[in-house]
Length: 230
Image: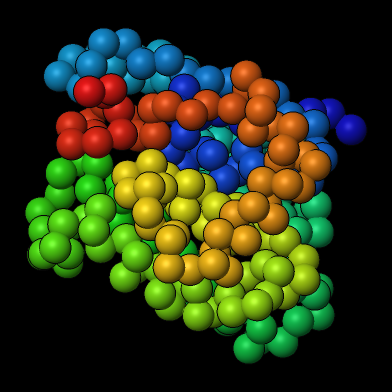
């Protein structure tokens, strides 16, 4: 079986959960990491991607991308679900009911909302001031209340087995802890959940390896947080 080929910027961004999923799945892959040229003020900062963007045979050229033999795919959620189905990490049975599929979609969307809040914070979006008048870092524990309640005493979001949404949530919680180190303090079940994921053999090995990108979290347009080190 040929290696999967994944392409993304040399940062965490939308790719980190995909990379975690690949590591947990055991599927072999090769990462094509596109470097940035200059900073956000430079119109050339995306040049390395733009040079090849329309030459790779994608229907909707974008980053991240996945190449699996003759099959080509873009859009981060589509890539996550493709890998999850391929590796049996979707979180529900193949013959799951419409209601089970809907619950999976619901928790995926809820977690994705949490992720996009820190993206908006990083780029300095005014929506953050509107949604979180106490300030984004201080708001994180409040944001996590419903997810902690959903998790309760389950091992993972959909039960006993890890799924792709767990790895989106893991990345979100890890980034939130960078912004507010006390973000999980009032949720022992989320603390245990993070430790459970970090202690999976494949994750433990990957998180300690040089292949893991820890910074930047976001791209050059993130003027408030996530790209430049203060």
